[in-house]
Image (tube, rainbow, N blue to C red):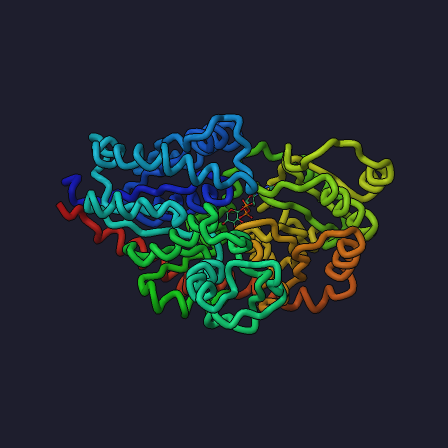
Length: 480
Ligand code: UDX
């Protein structure tokens, strides 16, 4: 076949856990559903970790048109790449990765005897410089934002929030004030529910500017992919479509992949782990011994950093609730010394289990798990929704402040513990979730799980949108 008649998609994620895993799922879906050539451009750092902790090559070995390539993220290997230092990553990607990305594409080094030239770039929306490179080389670019549509829309409305005087914050800002200028979400978002980057008193703040400009520039791309589904974020999606009509909502991607791959192979693809840390599977055997729906799973994701005081308050609150718990606490995610009070060690021995990194997708499916204390990362939120698990939300940064508000005030499948984590509140909320308001939350959670499943089965909205994306990608040819 003439190579120029085949499509070749370059997928380029922002190189941190929550972005890499969902863009890998997209890559696998494209390979599974078509013969399109797909190159996944990962950072050297993230790729080394994937090779070390997953069976990545085996997972993709059945897709002959799939390739991995790597690029530097510009940071030294020992940089923590945590949420509190994410601006370092923005800066280094701009300074180091961006010119190399351009060079990689313009030199034609991504094509080879078996591989046609790149016909479309699907880049993480945070790295919107990909649009400029695409324009220069006449390659269409579709952006992929890994967080909620509601967060994207809130970012999009920031110029209006500046105009109305809600932003920047000042000493007198009332964080509980309901915002009138995030259209479609009036009476939902308060100032404290805006993405963490908006919590600034300085409009020239680097983190704030990066995400706002990247969001506004999305209108220049050939389309936008979101890991969400229509029934979940109807009003934000309706608003976004007014500005970006070519919108592909194809999530929840983990469930979508599971649905498509298992329906064709008759198996659950648990081998789809994309962990950048080593999964400690011993917790699965511990879960097997726990009663039905009795365990609270606790995890703050891949980038949260806790102070020692926050860590101890959570720990006391969870132990004092008397509920069984499984806590995935990432290595080096707590600042400060590790002198642990004896009552916590004793409480954990009786009712708890702690690991450094859990096989989270499997944990959330386990029948012993009855609730999720989460940082409201978008992947975790979607994974929890799909399993019908109610949540206690303690957002740390980025989109998480918006996501937790959706849980507490819109979907009502859990509680939003935003901006506080004293032991009394933690204990109270764990009891509410697992006991006092359990029926109420379970009802809402089950309803949402049903909608999520519907979206990714044949004729569902996400299923149809992925088919449309595949068809559009096939039509894209080099405009030379
Ligand atoms: C952050 C953002 O908050 C998120 O919304 C954004 O889109 C990506 O960056 P992160 O802290 O990585 O995310 O959280 P989340 O989006 O929830 O992703 C974490 C992923 O790691 C999930 O897929 C989860 O299943 C996995 N995980 C987490 C594990 O496999 N094991 C663990 O122990 C913890």
